[in-house]
Length: 258
Image (cartoon, rainbow, N blue to C red; front, side, top):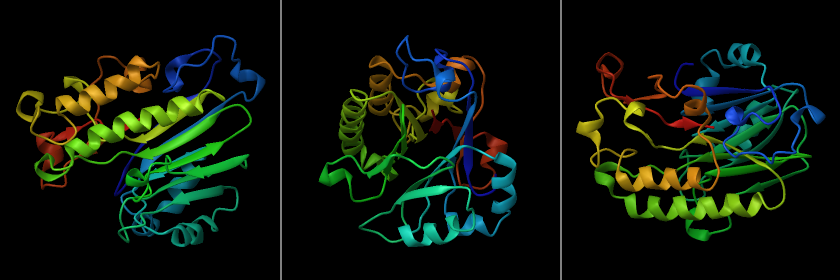
């Protein structure tokens, strides 16, 4: 996909944790609700810009049941205007309250959600439009664009707090029904997830021990990195640096995660 990166997860079989970030109860039978579900997580890096770059054809080719967009860089009405061109989908969008054209998340689904909520209920985290949650009959879908630690790791302390608070938010949801989480987590959890791990460790945003520990916290509480569950040794990146030639130099890392 031009100007963005996406991850495709298809739900196939009950009890198989590969398609979820949160492990389901043993008695949860997905086939009671659907025979197959296709969920896409896609950092579009500006939904208005990508709309002019073959977006319609991409949407038709993907034909997903649910698409979770990150970094829409648009307000709610702007995303709604684009979504209206895709009548098969219901949409729920969140946008930055502090900065126009920054951050932003959106969930598009063929089935209408029972309810939709925005943010995680903590004021310091709820200013940048980073979370949308859609409730369906038997599960929640949470779309997240996790804050980057920034140039010189200036936001690393904030990122540490975010990871703890976001985990607590997910744990509250899962007391009600199973949770599917996807989005741009802005982290390389293992050395295999990033090019030149030794050079980048504790120097590059997304690959500090603080961020690694934050993501490990999700795993310790029962969440599953589905790509690594399915492909424990495969080297495959979902993000490349904007710097020239990054793909040739493999200046890349894992970012988009279910």
